[in-house]
Image (cartoon, rainbow, N blue to C red; front, side, top):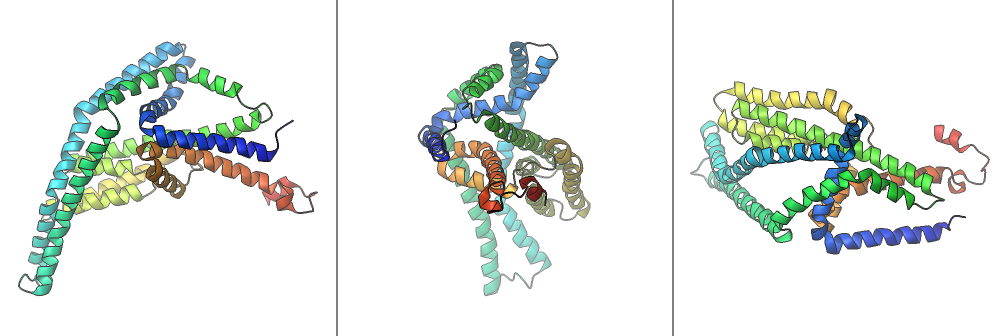
Length: 365
C-alpha cells in the first residue's frame, strides 16, 4: 500500500532540501563532477550506438574520450586563444570606437554635434564617456571572471578531474541507471520511470540538440565574419552562437554588434555592410528551416522564458554551478508541472461532484 500523499511530499521535499543545501555548501567542490556528469550524459547516446555496432562499452568509451581529447586540445591551441585575444582587443578598442562615432556624426551632421555649443560639447563628452565606461566595466568584468575562476577552483585540478569523472561515468552509465531504477519505490516505479523518460527526452531534445545548433551557428557566423574581414568577427560570431538557444535573440544581438562594427570598418564600402547583414539573414534561414526542426524538434516542452528564469534564479543563488544544474532542474519541474496538471484535471477537485464524467473526453475537449 502506497504511503499517504502528505508523507510522500514530506520525504521528497526533504530530498530536494538536502540537494539544494549540498549545492549551496559544496557547489565549488561539486563543479568538476557536475561538468563531468554533463559530458557523460551528452556522450552516452554515442557510446550506445558504438555498442550496437559490436564494440564493448570500454572500447567505445576509450574511443570517444580520445576523440574528445583531440577536440579539446584543438580548441585550446587554436580557438580559445583567438577568442580571448579578440575579446580583450574589443574592450580596449571601445573608446576609440566611440570617438570614431563622434567624428562620423560631426562630419555628417555638424548641426547635431557642434563642439562650440553647450549641447555639442555635452553630446561629445557623453559619447566618449560611454566608450570609457564600457572599457572600464569590461575590463573589470574580465578581471572578476578570471579572479573568481581562479579563486573558486584550481584550474589544474579541474582539467584533470573532469575528464576522469566523465570517463568513468560514461563507462558505467547504463549500470548506474539500472541501480537507480532498482532503488525506486515499487508502488511508484512505473510513474517515476515515465516522468524520468519525459525529462530525458526534454533534455535530449533541448540540451543536446540546442547545443549542436549553437555550435553550428557560432561556427557559421564566426567563419563568415572572419572571411569578410570584420574586426572582432570571431568574438561576435561566438556570442551570437552562444545565445542562439533563445529564439531570435542570438541573431539580433550578434547582428547588431556585427552591423555596428561593419558601419565603422566599411563606412565607405556599403557592399560589405550588406554582406555582414546577409550572413546573419542566412544564419536565421539555416536555423529556422533546417537546424532547429532537425536537431531540436518542434515541441520540446522547455519554454525560453522559463529557461531564462531558471538560469537567472539558480545563477544568482548558487553561482556558476547553479547555472549548470538550472536546465535539468527546469526540465524536471516542467515535466512535474505537466504531470500535476494532468492529475488535477482527472481529480474530483477539477471535475466536481459529477465525477462520472469521462476525464479523457474532457481532456480532449
